[in-house]
Image 1 (cartoon, rainbow, N blue to C red):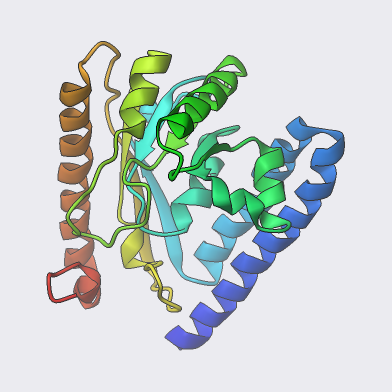
Image 2 (cartoon, rainbow, N blue to C red; image 1 turned 90 degrees about the vertical axis):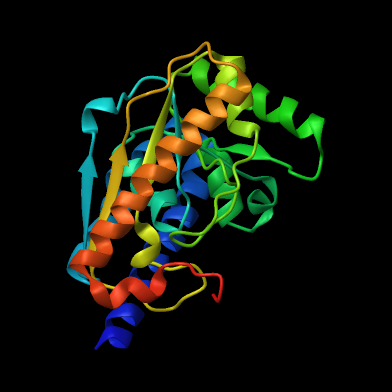
Length: 253
């Protein structure tokens, strides 16, 4: 049953993403703002409904009082593909910091570029940081919230964190508050796994970190805030779904 459900959910979600990317690759040639409306009003809600009614995966948002639709930086835990799509359902018009090489993928990459993502070439060193800041400033001028995953890649629940300095550069350059986001997505849509487990995905928005801290102070506060809350969400998830304890990272794998 789990295999069949996972198969149907994967086909549906990736089908929606494919149709959305094809549509926005065409629409974006005529109107880039229209790609945001198409994606956030049609395709993203379709993914959320598929998670709920096909995969048995509910989405719960906590700390919604910290969600602002105008400007701001949101730094979240990255455990699966879910957050890269579902967060747009709650942060309308948000843009993501993403690996530049993803924009080279036919159709998918074109759609991301036309939507207005912030590409970063991680192999380009300081030049990449300057390019990221330039794009981020442009998005901020257009009143679009910015979402970044500070670790830069997906991590398993409970895996030792590795936060990178890009988020601190955005924080200090844009002088905007950074709202941490904790989540438990890795239990239900695990990295490099075909299976999708039913349950409750939680996104918890935490109190924003105001501008003005030093780089070290900011990074420590951000990491402590996200990791402590993620640990709490992990324990809550295991308590409600003991069968998913196997998804928690251990040094043995």
